[in-house]
Amino acid sequence: MITGFYAGLLAIILIALIVNVIRFRLTFKIGIGDGGNHILHKAIRVHANFIETVPFALVLMALCDYNGTRPFYLHLMGIILVISRILHAYGLQKTSVRSFGRSVGIIGTMAVIIIAAVLLILQYVTA
Image (cartoon, rainbow, N blue to C red; front, top):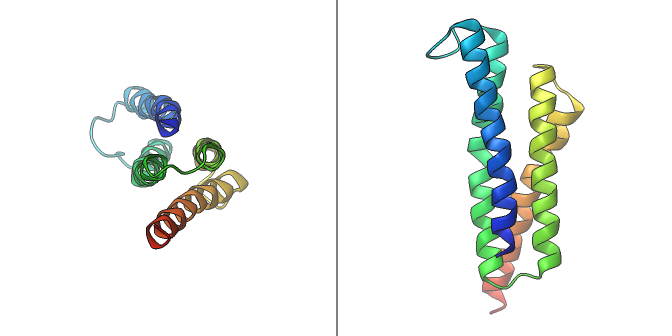
C-alpha cells in the first residue's frame, strides 16, 4: 500500500515532535503540562496538532488506497501531507502568531482530508 510509505515518513516526523517536547521538558524541568512556559507550550501544541489531524488523513488515504485510487493521487496527497506537517511544525515552533508555515501547513493538511473525502464519496457513488 502506498499509504504505508507516507505513514512511515509521518511516524518519523511524529517521533521528532515527541523528542522535541521531551527535550524542552528536561531543559525546563517540567514534568506535566507546560508550567506556563511558552516554548514548551508551543512544542506541545505542534505535537498535539499533528496528532489531531494526521491519523484521520492517513485513514482516509488508506481507504482510498484500498479502493484502488490511482497511485498518482495517493502520492500527491502523501507528499502534500508530509510537506504540510513539516511546514506547520516549523511555522508554529518559530512564532505563535500567523506565519507562512503554519498557514500553508494547515491548508495543505485540510486539502488532503477534503480530497480524500471527495474521492471516497465519488468512489461510493459511482460504484
